[in-house]
Image (cartoon, helix red, strand yellow):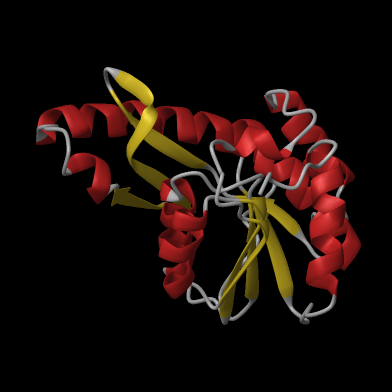
Length: 219
């Protein structure tokens, strides 16, 4: 079966919000994962009239194959969580020094993006709230897993992950770690997140800032 196709990330966010509206709860905060996930999340937050914040997550790619994640990092405030992709690290040898060097480099970029996206706006409190984590898709699931671990540290009432498209393997692996997982399309033929979009143009920092600005409930 071919993956469901969305026109672009904003279209995907609108379709996703229709699904989420049926079970929307009070006291919800929407967190978008940059870059593309924030564009999807902005549509969801607007539809649910919920506050939107950004949760910066960075993939830790293999030094010789950066697109393949050996782990990921995520930060909520000063707390930084690191997760390892065991399936990848079981196949390739990465010593601790190399892993730490990649993590340190990506942490520098994570903090840069946080400053660029949030500016002086404080972090939206998550304790006791229903947190809705949104990305534009799940491939390996490593970045979303890091996001879930980081959010869990803030003692939310409930965590829901919502994506337009995902790998069936990643969806199944992540499901036990959250209270609810909503994925509109998880085709057995999944190859890449971009297959679910007619327009999957890379999202820039300016587009992330614009999405945050137009969403409701930013304060």
